[in-house]
Image: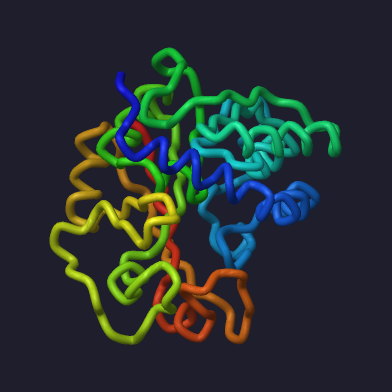
Length: 254
């Protein structure tokens, strides 16, 4: 498969941003509890994963692992994780944390649209941002289905649809007004310096998931706590307390 036309831009951008995510990555590796997204909502509140003891012995894959903290959390639960990412600098940070925290698992330089694994290799797949927003869903979702065993689950977190509809640019905060068309929504270029983002509208995403062999189990729209600060300029907690800035999709391969 030829690399997607956006991949080099994504790889370059995340290579430049890798230093910015070093300390947040270290803090995440040190966590003993699973939290989700920019608001760090505990898994115990959202219940996206179900009983955590189920992960013991599972073969898992993190799609767009970045610094690898989710795979590290899975390893702490007794899983056998594999992290994949197309950006060498991000994987270098993940390897650094493996040595620092004494948690070892395979890290593979690859991209979610063309996974170097056989069919039905994994019990569970996860993407918190990563492939969920920086890979073409028409490419990565069928690949995730291919490498999952029948009955295997995929859980992915992406930006909320309303975030895209209400945000003028990547450096402008979300507004109470819609500034972007909903129909035709998928590939978004916020500005020339950032990687392109993919955010497929609900109807096409549901059809794609079903066509890829998934059954939808849950959609969790995250509500931010009031008066919480985040490092990103495009949304604040006042907006994200009223409207979901992030959403978690939980699906299972038929």
